[in-house]
Length: 526
Image 1 (spheres, rainbow, N blue to C red):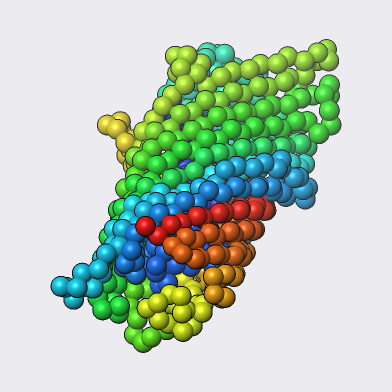
Image 2: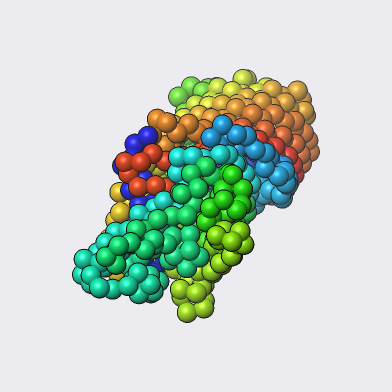
């Protein structure tokens, strides 16, 4: 494990309780967008095919194939489940379901016989470009580290410094000062407040900083994380067609972010209560992030010969302005010498004058570059005569290029500089692949697709990817079309319950998420 990737990611810096970490940037960029039922059935490959409203969010040049007006609606429903593997133990998360939104909107196409650009099209649509619906659960026995370890290390450095500057100062006075010191992290303060972190009295007035959980050695650890929400993007696009050979288009997107997370991490003495000064400690957190962004997509599609289409698209970074809210509670149960227990609990608002903090920051997502090709069987201007196609997309995403900065006038430049360095060190550019095809039998169509989203982590020990297998049916006749698709997703990722200080190694869970999504698209030619 490359320790340099985890220099500060667990301890939240100072009284300002910064919650932005590299994982936030990845959450906003390692996404699998939804689309219409037809587009999802062919693996989401829409970079060169055109003639589909989802082109607005993939390669807007595809809108140039339109010569008429179209209304599209795509409701859907998703089913989610998963499994976590942590230190040799497996645990299954709760199953749940959520409404899913696919691409919906209008496309207005018209011909222009007085211009070499023979047709033009304008579109406005909405799409769920990211879904955050997920439940993570894992547990296991850990005799290597505790989530209190970095808290104890941080307070140890503080304690030594205070002892050096004030040799006669009592341990209680040092702890009291630490609880009000803006230089210490919130988690360390909560650990001190609940006696998870403490000082053993020593000779000559100097004590020993320790963690009660670490002294228990064998710890049962359990983590449950539930996330909901997503990114819903509203987009407007325009495209033009030159002699049915060259199609050029662009779109302006406005993504709206709504993310909510609740998490509960517990570690307890694996030997049970009554044999030392630690029974269990629980850290529960509620976090939400809302905001809005803006992005630009440009693309072209070229038909060098009939039946062949080549597409190229560039997605600019999305420039987000986000507002986050945060609250947490820590509870520690301590065994006493008499066998009785004492439970101490504290809320994060205790350190913020009784209110939960809010903070603003700006996030710039990675660039995306898309190259695509399609082969159309019996290519003809009359789509009724076409018999099908195969199509594929290759996409490159610069995950390590994401950046954060303060969203207000606070003096947070150094913190966000450290976060950005960690993003660059933690992630890498990765390729995504999408392929699909359609066969047409008069008014009925059958479709199959596959998509693979590559590993964004720079550390070879972290194995992650996302895969979609999809299939569907379509019906088109007399200006109306109906498409039905099922997408089965197999995702693999990792989760770190906490981070320890280098050169110590971090422990993490391997996650497997399985989900199914049913999409129904209904459209009308107007």
